Image (cartoon, rainbow, N blue to C red):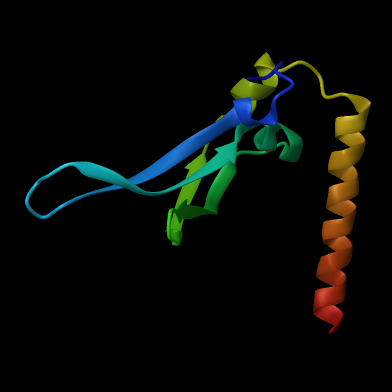
Length: 105
């Protein structure tokens, strides 16, 4: 996960399943995910993050997730490349500008 080139290898999935009243088979109603690399990029644990759940019919609700693991991931992860660090800081700058613009409106 940490050294894979595939971003999805760091995904942690959450599945919402349902069962018929008669106790029949279960079926998936929706799923959502968080990415462990997000913890590394943001340099923090995920606390009370809203995860949208998507199903065959579209929106299946929202799950609120806390995922504590940043310290362990940081200890195990290779250092971020200069491009990843620059991308992360650029995203933070854009987010700050968006907040300022939203407040000024």
